[in-house]
Length: 112
Image 1: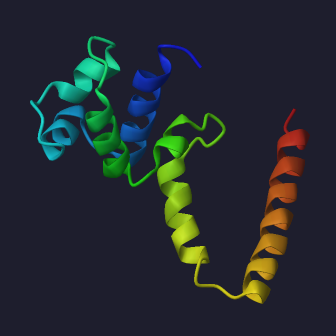
Image 2: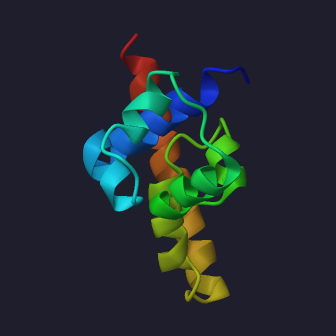
Image 3: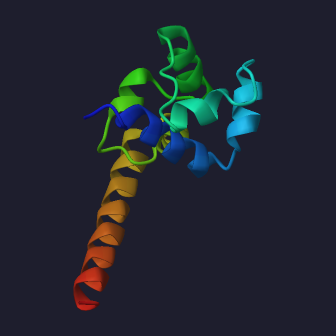
């Protein structure tokens, strides 16, 4: 992780959610250039602002910094739908997910 991580991660998450930098800034109660300044590395958010950014995306700070999780907002939405499922339903879903993942992997291998 480096100094570019926060601005790059913020840009990724914001574009994934389809919100403009100006609209996000205003939603956070900030001046309209706030997010743009962070993304352009002209401003580093204080802890309070960083936590507000995480809350905006409905993610934890840990999820924000998890480089392996490329779409934490979407993953959280998926997790919320999984929580009420029974153990059997989760096992069935996991089995189906593995099948889909293996199928996609085979398709990708065949395309080279």
